[in-house]
Image (cartoon, rainbow over all chains, first blue to last red; front, side, top):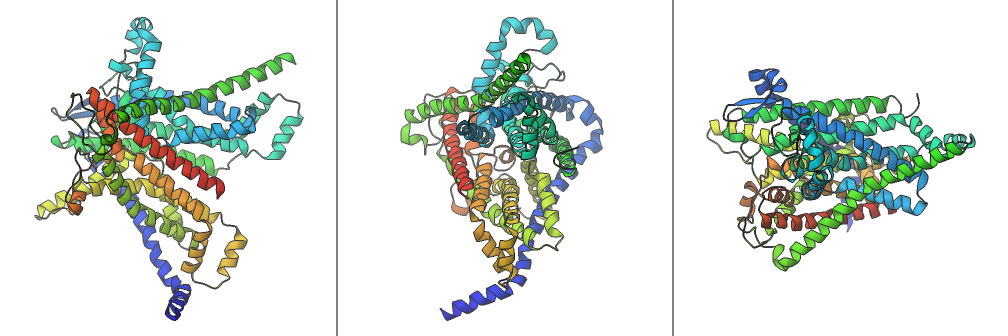
Length: 310
Length: 292
C-alpha cells in the first residue's frame, strides 16, 4: 500500500519525462501519412514516365497490350460527381430548411437521427441496395419506350440497369446526409439577433429561410465541396452500380461506365499479372488523390476566411 | 400579400418533400435488407452464422462464418493499433502547447480524414510490396505479406485513426479553461494532468472510439488490396494473420456481383448482419454523445 502511494507520487511528479514519449504517436501518424503520399507518388510516377500526359488524355485499359489511359474513368468520375452533387445539394438544402423551419420539435430530432444514421451505413450496403433495388427501378421508371429514342444521345443501361446515371443517383443519396449535417448545423447556429431581426421585418417563413441561407452561404459551399470529395472517392457502392464497362463516351450518362475509384476496385485481382498495370492503378489513385487534395484545400481556404459574413 | 404567402407555403412544402426524398431511401434500404436478410438467415438458421460458402449455383445457402470471424479479427487488430496511437497523439497535441509536432499532426490528419479509403489500402499494399521486393533481393522474406490479415488491419487502423484523433482533440480542447487551470494548479506532471482531463471527457472519447471502430468495420475498399479475401476459416494460430482473410464487407461485394443466385442470397444475409451491427453502434454513439 505504501509502495503504491510512492509509485503514484512519482508518476504524478515525473510524468513530464514520460509525457515526451507520447509524442512518438504523433510522429508515427505523421510518418504514416507521409509514407502514404510518398508511395502513391513514387509508384504512380512510373506510368507518367512511360506514357506522359497520354495516361490522362486517352481512353484504353488493356493488360494484354500494356496500354493504359484513364480519360474514360476520369470523365466518369467528374460526370457522376457533378450530377450527384447537384441532386444532393437540392436534397440537403431542402431537408435542412424543413428540419430547422418546418418540423415540430419532436420530429426534428427524428429526422436528424435518420439523416445521421444514413451517413453511417456501410457503403457496401448502399451498393447492394443500389444494385438490386435502385438500378432496376431506374431502368423501369425511365423505361425502354423512353430509352430507345434517346439511345444515340445518352446511351443505354447495362443489364440490371447499371449506368453512370444510376451511380449518380446512388451517390446523391449517399452524400446528401453529409452535406445536410453541415448546412443544418450552420442554419441552427445563425445568431439569434439576426434571426429575430429577419423575423421582425415581417417576412414570410420561407423568405427568412432564404435570407438565412444567404447568410450561411460559406457553409453551403463547404458542404458541397465535402460532399463532392466523398462522391469522387466513393468506391464500392459505385463499383456495384456503374456497370464497370469501358465507356470512352462518358457524357452518354445512360451507358454503363467506370469511375477512377471503381476502376481501381474492379482491377485489383488481375493487377499483378501485368507489368505496368500496378503503376497504372497507382497513377489513377494519384489523380484521385490530387482531386481530393484540391477539394480539401478549397474547404480549408473557405473555412479559414471566416465562417460567416462577407 | 397573398402571393408571397403562397410562395412561402410552396417553398416550405418543397423543402419537406426534399427531406422525405432524403430519408425515404434509407428507410427503404433498411426494410429491404431486413426482409431479405432475415428470410435468408431463417432458411439456414443457426448454420448461416458459422457455415462456409457453398458451391456456386447450388441449392444451398451455406453461411458466412469465416467472414464474420475475419471482420472480427481485422477490426480487433486495427483497434489495437489505431485506438492507442490516436488517443495518445491527440493528448500530446492538446497538452504540449509549444510543440510544433502537435499542430503538424492535426494538419496532416485533417488532410487525410475524408480521403478515399481505397487510396489508403492501395498505399499499404504499395509499401508492403516494395518491402517484399526489396527483401527478396537479399533472399529474405517480408515479415508482413501484402495480402494478409495483418496488412488489412494496418489499412483499417489508418482509416480509423483520424476519426478518433479529431474527436479526442476536439473534446480535450473543449474542456472549460477554469477546469484546466484547476487541474494544472494541482502541480502534477503533464502526464498526470492529461490523465485527469481524459477522465473528464471519457464519454466523448468513447464515442470517438466507437465512431472509428464503426468506420473500420464497414470499410470494403481498403481491404481489396490488403486482406484480399478468403472463403475459409483462418487456421493455424498467429500464422493465420499472415494469410489472406475474408470480411463481411468483401463477401457482400463479391457475392452480390457473382451472379449466382445462392451467393446473392447469402450476400443479403451478410448485409443484414452488418447493417444490424452498424445501426446498433450508431445508436450507442448517439446515446453516449447525448448524455455526455
